[in-house]
Length: 374
Image 1: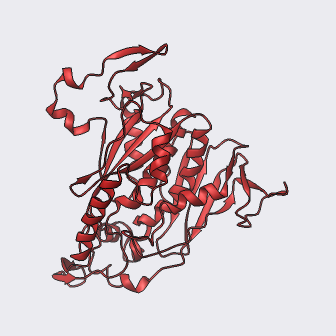
Image 2: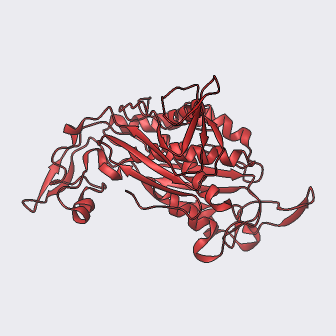
Image 3: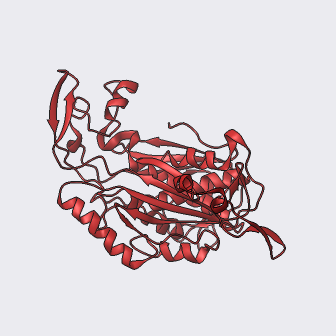
């Protein structure tokens, strides 16, 4: 099982990309919270492959609940067995919530030999060192982006709980290669903005940027390559005063969790690295009283000061590397012969991780925020 994350709300993961299933456990969720299975399915669909500009691997990603909930049918009957009835309302019972998602569309033959000839920029080599020759690397094993499926399933529950408290989380694809989308308004971003992106097949704010980004991805695919991306995420409605200084700051917690998503290479809050070229007079956010509340005119600090929420929206951006699996011939080594060699990677892979990562960032951020306020 993957190491546990969280203080009051805790999440842990299990499974491998080509194993029987992947899944996770979420503990600390209060009893009596209701959510709809159809809404969960719609959230999971935003992560699913099989669409244009994503991996051809298409999984049903039907979330099955093993514990921690009861089910209420349209007739009002309650039971503890997950029948998969999409009309069911699901109710938490206060116990740890365990979910599983079956792996059905696997092609393990595509990964034969990678224990001996590790794929560049993958975890094959380090997994071999850490776990030995029996480590599971088909489809990336436990290091695979497939593990984001249970993250999304459990993160959805956290997201809906937060919404019941007036806290909303949304994300979009800010950049693909050198093509960029519009940014969220750092002061006035709202649930309406989040809903608009979630309704789009390609998760951007501006439709014009969608076409430009798709061309960048298509060009990379046509040359047997991949491309990196940036996902911007925002949190609204969270009150001032949550968090702690130093090691338990809000930025620390978010970064800790978001780096669990495969392919993450960096994270910045507010103006981030751009702040290095600014002066204090430009970067400082003036305080103002508005509607009898303390706010800031700008939001370069991303709603966090000294590791503690200021009441302004939390805005951060996450960098995802280009997908490591590309069809071009690459240099590697043979571990058994200790010689240099070449390899070609076959199989089905995302040409741009960022497209499907948007909803994963939302889910992981939801776990962090619920933990923060619990």
